Length: 207
Image (tube, helix red, strand yellow):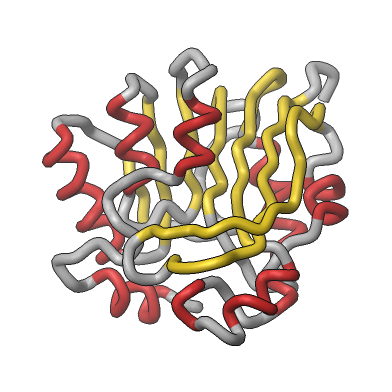
């Protein structure tokens, strides 16, 4: 899915995945002290903007110019600012150890690049930094093949397994890692029973 696909999805006035933040992100941010946080593939900005309302210094990136436009509109509506870059992996311009936290919320990459991209993203967190992750598991295909409204890629290689998360974040202490089936209702494109992986980890101090 390239920038053209996402620009087409985001060009309407309505927010494709709603204006409310992801519920797992809300839960996990509630226990953290605000600092500098990175939102890869932040789309229309619902999650990054929410973090900014909590006092986080938010850096987001996405390949979609329409996504950036919508994110900046939402930030203005909420009375906050975010740093939003038009960029994509692996050419993003962040430094190792730059961030206190990172939120990967339904950020998908092609199967050929998925492992390398996640390992690169992990380097942007400082030791002790927190990653919050939610995305569809490989078992989600059983839901979105019968209900396209459930959303998510149809390419199994872009979906996740628990074993992959352990590999990509091998230098992290696992605080939570589970695969769940649950109903998700986020805008017009996440609607119905879904299979997801939820992961929260802390980067080990010796890496």
